[in-house]
Image: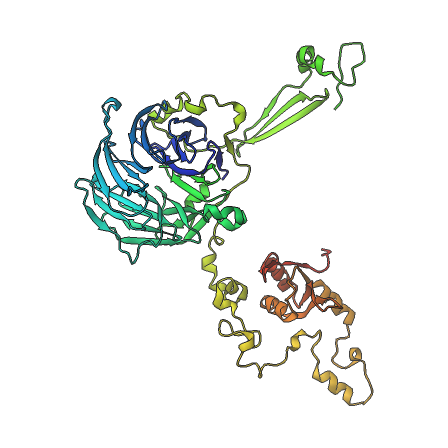
Length: 326
Length: 294
């Protein structure tokens, strides 16, 4: 396959997200402009101007009308996907990190980093249908975990919120009461910062990637460990194929160590693993830096990776990918 | 191709001036060019566009552009996605100039690189005798005793059968044959080895055959000795000679050597397998010692 290279960002990529139809790809980077691309040919559709800091995460509503972004400028913003117009700004006292729309797009979860004496927090916001009615108040604020919360996503039926971050613990919270329901078993859990989290299409399980050079597959309800995928480098990004039983891990050595070593030694590959057998299927090379973001097209026929090198690489799979046998 | 101006009686200028080019030469020369030709796309999606142009020097140039058109994604888009296709650009994308080349298709073909060849897992047990396959499998298999040939048990220096092992006679060019010695003993007269009973009288023949099955190994590390080479090549078949070139003065390896095989097929297999093989952190280059005539 010949990947499509998209060089719209001047700084390292942080997050990639496809809309539900799989025709748009949203990219976030440490430069201040989240960007939307056509996911088939990689043409740039537009940028969302307004943030004043690195953009860490984004989510798009099911109807592809709204975009929410979380940024280091201590805000999370709602955008009109079509026009790039800012609809609303949620202000925080510390940098916003992860954002996620609930099923139905009526709620959004936003995490904030620990900053000065503030500890990290998970905010639940109500999203109004009409942006004019939007209010900034949080419906719920969850506190407790130490360190950054790198990802927070909604659990089944919006009943729970799953969070993971620097303290390497995965937590399940009640989204109504804010009670901590579950923590993962320390014995089998990650040993270092969890950098990424990806839900399966049906929402029955999710995958976490960690700097401890592994990725783990968990049951979303019971939080039991299902599978572990071990690699050679810290995992910065994970994705699950919606079509085949494949998981993709992206990573590479620490960004600070990149300049001191040969790029071939960095293992800047997107590694494919068989989800069930936990066996490596192959690697897709190309980035000149660690992979920070991975996303699978909802049709499972293409995936994109975003790297520390500022490039988004969009890969449409060759037909032989679909009948790889272990 | 030189430019020839038809019609005008005056001799064509050797070179066009850039000033002229702009105004008049633009139109009146273009009709001279053959029309643009589009071939394909064929079943492989290869499309050829042949255009003719004048370059700066006024010479006609033929430009053949070969492109491969292919379907990027199965176009089963939802109605809304089709609608989104026609959305106007916004943000920084509005002022995007064509030359910005934000989106490019990689010139490099990227493959999903398999950690091992597909289907090789099934073959691995079958190739159990191949010590190379086992070498790659991990530390235990690397532990190969050169004295007794046991794998994964101990290192050569710790071999418990060290004393029992015969001296490495296989390394000498020709193993001494005992019956040759007895043949000469009867007369008590010196008989050159080549005419002794049982000796191979076709010495030159043999040499030639040996040369044919001789494999040159280059990019050896300095520490590689003949026993190491033998160990490396023995799995492929009977080896008749191993030689590592040493510097005469320093007796340090010069980094290349020769291995002679008894069978040509074995040699070919060794070349196939070991050329490009990483040995002692160097990539070996293994090839026929003499250029093959056939």
